[in-house]
Image (cartoon, rainbow, N blue to C red; front, side):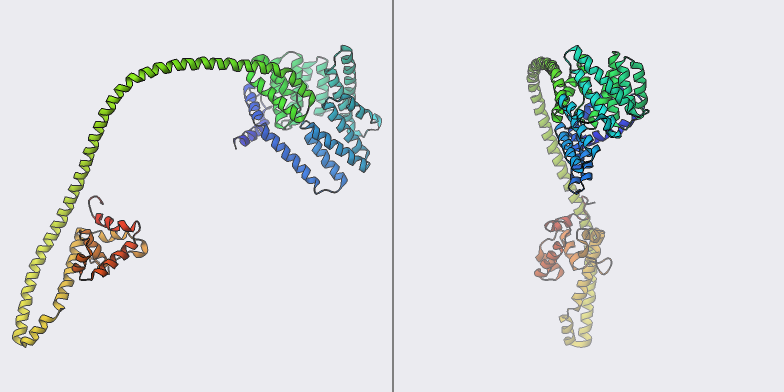
Length: 544
């Protein structure tokens, strides 16, 4: 993702390169980033070519196929010479089938261009000489003269003898004049050719002025920028201004790499200047990039050019690395000595540390024991407070009930005496047999129990239901009273956990009490096995 962002950033920021002069170091960092991410740019270029090739699968029209071949050739130009030759030959084969003169001429010049780039000058000139200059279609004439001018220019650059150089320079200049006469004035191509002539005539200031005027007009055209900036760099090179030469070589190299060009001179020339300035890291990286691209493109002349200087730069770079390695070794020796001294110091500190550590451990153990004791004391105090609170409440209620039941027993006695005296022994016996009095008193007892419990734990019903799932929550029919399930867990809260005792208290069977407890536990919101433990905490100081 970072690589994609970096590429997009470099593409977007190109709009402001020429609106104001960006500092050289910023441009170099931008170039560094593009060199690092050039594989991604190459991938995008290959994907674009693949889309064009896919179009051929759906095209049967020969003329349309020819135009697609032409687009593919344009993409491979300065990208992969072997592939560009393949598609130039395919253009030629289709042009012959179609019998179109301008198609044949265009394909022939494409093949000549590939030969010239590969250093096959004789073969390139043979292809161009096979065409009749006077019969070439108008829109191809500038391309025709451009190829002659380029090939003779290359032959001049690589000439061994002064006489050969002079001969090829004459032919180069002749075809440049032809080219100027076939290119429309007021175009950047015309300005480029004219500035090339001005530079050769040492009129560098005029050439620079002409190039600057166009450089600000083609901000979004990388193909135009690369040639204009490179020509401007050559103008500054002619007058010996290395700073400006380097600046425009950087711009040209950025445009070259950004459009995935593999056949270029800008980055190689820039690396030479950086080598002379002592920036060996960049010089080495840029030359390495140039070598990789020239090899990928199979541009033999560029490969030879890079190979001539690469060993020199690489030797200097390796020498620099060796110096850094020596410095690193010396630093490691110094660090090792310091480490030994530090180890000795640490040995003496270690004993003191052990003594301090033992003292701290003893203090920590003492603090831990004290904290544990304090927690136990808090729990005991909490339990005592709670027990006192429950005890006081229960005692007050118990005394009241005892007094009440004594009075009731007295009234019940008078009632039985009255029944015996007025209705006889039979009625007396029937009254003694009846459970109505006990049921009534038991009901009142549970009401007293509920009231007492809810006075001690006023939020018990709400807190207890918070422990259950929503659908299983239990609410009493009468406010201020409990139902059977709530009474069971109220007794548990008071510490009566034995089902037998609970059954005796509530006058139910042990099985019934057990079933109630299981049913409520199954409705627990959390762990059912811990429900009764959580009930024991309801209303406690800890819970509050």
